[in-house]
Image (tube, rainbow, N blue to C red):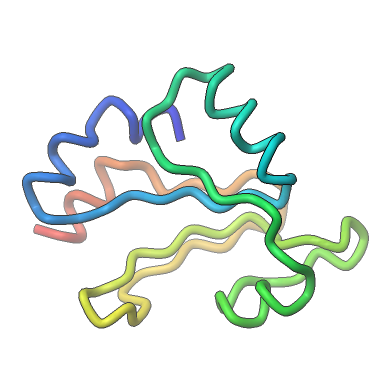
Length: 102
């Protein structure tokens, strides 16, 4: 998320909005955003398991939350690219997303 803050202008130039989704409460997500000093909007309070299924993410049954996932959507909100992680950390670096979009 921090890495995306550094290149938000590049995404804006392409007409792309970057949004982070968090399994934390909206208040905790806002606190994380403030602590990390990032400009990426961060959405929290995602209902489990409905939001997992709606997003096409994997379920983490042990934590009752989304498994780390990252998605690039097209203008029609269809998934163009996805990264899923078996651990609690998913990585889709901004440089890779910019390459995918160009």
